[in-house]
Length: 453
Image 1: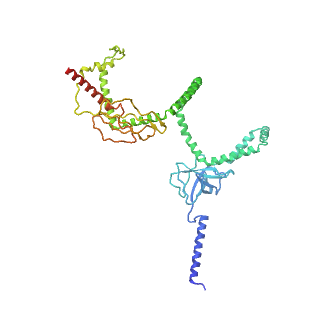
Image 2: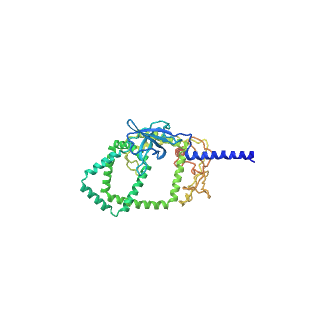
Image 3: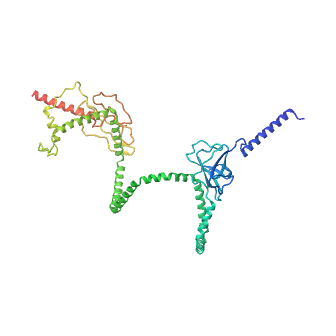
């Protein structure tokens, strides 16, 4: 007895089987609900082109030829593009050789990068320039006329000599044939790239033609240079030999002085970093501008011509500008010394640290035997004994920061990436202020002593 549950199971089984069979047929034969896109093109001749020949886009088959028919002006090729495949609307049709057997195919070539909207059913594709197949009859006729123009005896001689030359060269001929087939396959693979290269060649050649005079001059100069090098080849060889020896000596010096060179480069970088500070750059700019204005006025007021020596230890000079400090600003006209409102504290003395790099030890720390500061308020701060190694340049020092001209000392800070936190010994602030004030104090002291006497 067939129960209701058995009937339901049988119906479910048959429905699932039908669905699976349908999916298999769709995957095998294609979706019957989708229809191919039909496009056409008109060629002057369709020799050797038949139905079911492939249609390719960028070397990939996207459809096939469905029909070839006569129309006014040539042969109309009807192509069916596979369902779901989109072909750009800027393509042009060209007939190519599909395989070594001579079968042909329609190749769709994008003209503007393939960015146009896709073709729709019924669109007509233009023909690529020279995209029509060769006329086989015309080729055969031309070959026949060529062979007929050769005398029979000479043709027999040519064939005999060719047979003699090829006798025993079967392996070489086979190698040539295989190489030709490989070249043909690679050429077909990169056919579009070659066509793009040929299409771009005229603009490149036009650019070369436009630059023809410059290229001619460059070639002429190159020929002259080669002539000079040829005539002085002995000197050039000697120079190259000496250059090699010099390079070896320079390499020895660099290898021997690597620690000191590393410290020098590091310290120069620190000085450059310090000078790049806005306050220091402003001080330096002010100093240079003031110095230029001062010496410009002195140069304008100083007479030109030779200058005689003023003392027995001096010598004659070609320019009188060296007298400007004595003639334009005599010592008796110097301004009187002024007293500081508060005593100035001499800065600390930081001797140079030793050069300690990953390349080894360089010069030792700076020292002066028996050095005594001129003021008891001045102290010498030696480098710390446990100074950390700095890559490529000495040890990191700590000290008071630079004091801008006309400003107040900033809060002491220390940046490990910049060991030198003050301007170097030739800093604009120290050069402009402290020596001038020291000289004024000394002159004032001398005048006070003379007045007391």
